[in-house]
Length: 398
Image (tube, rainbow, N blue to C red; front, side):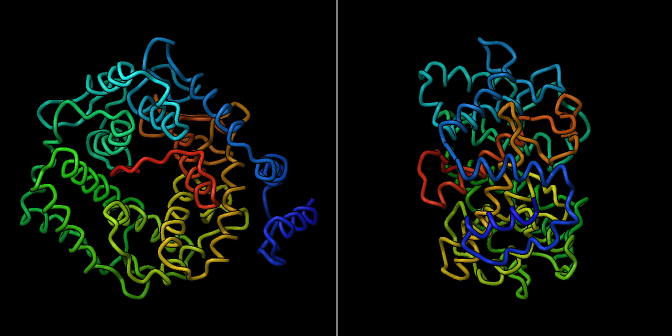
């Protein structure tokens, strides 16, 4: 099987050596799925089949035929707003939202708005509220708001209230003090999700600026963008000072920077040191085509590197052939993570607890978050390779 896979890869990717010499050390189950599912679906890729299968899974998570409520996975018993946002964005990617009437779109937006708090503008679903929901940024209220921005834009609607929780950040003295709390000459462990918080705050500010014509929000965005440019590590073109020879630290640097780059990509601000960023991002790809230290790389690790490579490839011809090769391999790997029910896993062969027991998925069970994130990844990859069936909206969101 190993020899056959190497030969097929050479034919598909037109390259003799793609770094598969360590296949002997790979997990046999993962290797078999790679060959029989990912590779096969890549060779016979069909947008219509992918759409049918993915939407079949999304529909299976719908709590009732007449509502906008969705379960997170088959491991859960109660619907929540997060899952509904993912369903909305998946339907948007496949252009299915256009089949809804304007009344139906308005009703879906009203469903979201039922959870919005007038005082701060955040959204609170009692079924999933816990300590992390209030305090974290890798998941929770601020994180959810960025997802809902994508859903509202896709629906052509707006939240009922503005994002009042952002107003502290209008004070540039406060904003600078908040950013100064971090040691930008150090490195940021996974336990420090300041990258997620910056992303959550700034993208919400960009929405406030663009959709509510909020001048002060725009000034705050400009301040953060200029501040963080000054904090870039010139040796890597990214943030933090990591040991780039350590695969774990290199991966963390890419993930951290992906979250920060989002504010610049949305505003079409040129990225400096593109060549260095591409070099280091390509180094994060493993032998299966995913982008992580572990061979069963996650939906987050994969899109973080893929998004950077695709966006920078539109700005420079540097290592174009290497990027094309890497993204073909990545396309196959993303398809490895689709289940027979049409949904996707976050990380193959592992369960995932996503902030709350009602956002849990058992081992190799599909879930709404990875189904949306990996579908978005496929959409970006397909567009990169010249296909135009997918709909990727422009919004200050993921």
